[in-house]
Image (cartoon, rainbow, N blue to C red; front, side, top):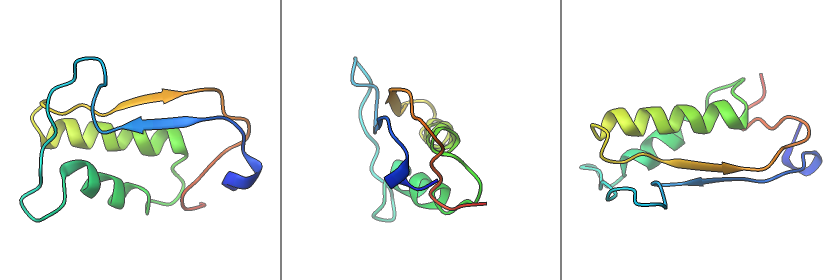
Length: 85
């Protein structure tokens, strides 16, 4: 299902807005978050929840836990994929 036919909200933050630690800059011009997001959204078959969970796990590992992305959602009706299966 495309974004046009899905309803609900999904916000993903670079870090925990409630006291999260600082952001990390990448050594190649891209932050760990940007690299993880760019790779993950190209993965077929991951829905929006799986995609952003994977981004968070990758960023946490890449920064040794110093940066932890944070997700805020409301129920989403239907399914949303960046790349369909």
